[in-house]
Length: 284
Image (tube, rainbow, N blue to C red; front, side, top):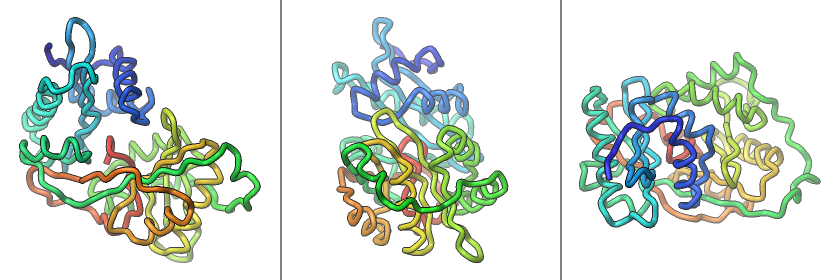
């Protein structure tokens, strides 16, 4: 077994691993990793077969995101995940990124802690399962899609709330799923907003930011109306009682906890209190 840089030719192997694990990423997500960090994504290979992956994305040189730490079930408990994680840390140390972040499952959290990651805050994955098309008879919320001017404004606001510029990701989300880019028309700044994407088996809402209960509910209802999938995923901030209450009221159930962890200094924590939901564990 050896570790090497991931290439676009490895995307089918990455898709195979995330499908086996029940993760929601698509080929478009993997291409995004390759495009944004061509030398910072890695695979573990055994006898010519990709048996593990790990990705990184650097945000504005402020911090980097580690994600997609996946190992083929047949090759687990052999230290491959640890080796891949160490490879990402070594890469980010080498290029001078001072801060590293990730969202850990309960299974992965002890491993990350051993490598110097500490808890920043808690997230919960909420899932809605519904019969197809049962929502089509509901009144449609008339929230417009974001214009280019609004998208630029939202990207700057999101930079403050996330802690770094990720406008390249927000543009990509808006291009891939424009129906899920939603902006409220509340009087005065700041606007409430949300993005979304079509995953492998579910539609995923996030990031989702709202400063009032009314705006948060309006966005959630609009997203649920525009989504045609049976399954919808939201990775919500555990501390945001408004978002948790809305998700429960709309039939979502809490599926699992996630822990946001950080290694190194954290001078750009953003404003997580202003977010209802993150983009996703693979992106932050």
